[in-house]
Length: 332
Ligand SMILES: NC(=O)c1ccc[n+]([C@@H]2O[C@H](COP(=O)([O-])OP(=O)(O)OC[C@H]3O[C@@H](n4cnc5c(N)ncnc54)[C@H](OP(=O)(O)O)[C@@H]3O)[C@@H](O)[C@H]2O)c1
Image 1 (cartoon, rainbow, N blue to C red):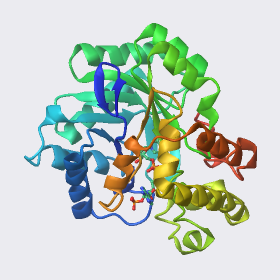
Image 2 (cartoon, rainbow, N blue to C red; image 1 turned 90 degrees about the horizontal axis):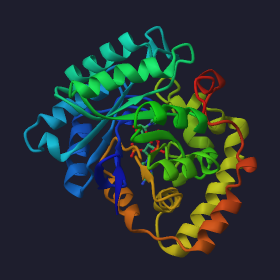
Image 3 (cartoon, protein in one colour; image 1 turned 135 degrees about the vertical axis):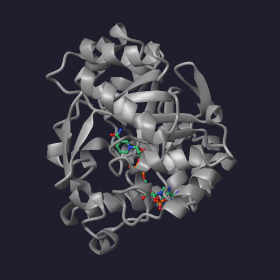
């Protein structure tokens, strides 16, 4: 299944590379590079990173893959992001800066780390409400004129912000969280993306691993808090996780009846959300790459979609998708 991002037609399943640098437990660069290579061989073309993942480490890893010799730069679609500033003293504290000067500096630093001349899709990772949107987009459009960026993306903005931005500069993609347990984009954002011809790139389509059935209370009790960001997310808290896990059990039952994995069912549901949807499931190892890519070929019957919509009705999800301090930076 090929779908458009701006003027590029690519497989609707891309690879989320964030976990190769941090947030979901231990990392291993050797395995990450093998994962990137195998993903390419399986047909993945869209690779998603950001300057903040591992504070530059994730982009440097992608540079090793791109410049390793076995992949032509033009053969892959490279998406990165700027605009989130990490606090070096507090792993989970961030601020937003979309001042035109900052975005130019951040983008040029990404190009250097990625060791490439151009970025296929450059996202503003969040919007700084104190900077007028037209000023930030003006800086991004200069980067396009200079050939440093091919297309513009936004992350976690509201329908109103997306529409306003698109009247200033063509927006190729919006990246926001979308999965069975995060259905906020369904009401306004997905129809607007279809209307404006904007690709919707769903991040955390597996609910950060939760919608695969592989994460329960015991998993979270064992996770090392300093390495696993999920420890900070209310949905994974001791008080919420069992209620949420009971929904995943029902997902597992449906997947078994369809003879597919729980993860594949969760991904196919996201892809069915709109013809504009792309998914970027995250994998730091080779284990799940093929299965996730093959979610492209799963067609879910209307009855199954309906049943899943009922089970994962937004009001039954226990806990919020981010800690409040991070949610405050989102308008999605
Ligand atoms: N724009 C933003 O603000 C934003 C925010 C978050 C993420 N993102 C992007 O979105 C990408 C994907 O989101 P995500 O990584 O947060 O969450 P995700 O894709 O929902 O889940 C990733 C987790 O699921 C596990 N997993 C993947 N496939 C599996 C399978 N078939 N069976 C069992 N477990 C499986 C992974 O483990 P393994 O690694 O061991 O396979 C990993 O722990 C990120 O990598 C990043 O590029 C963007």
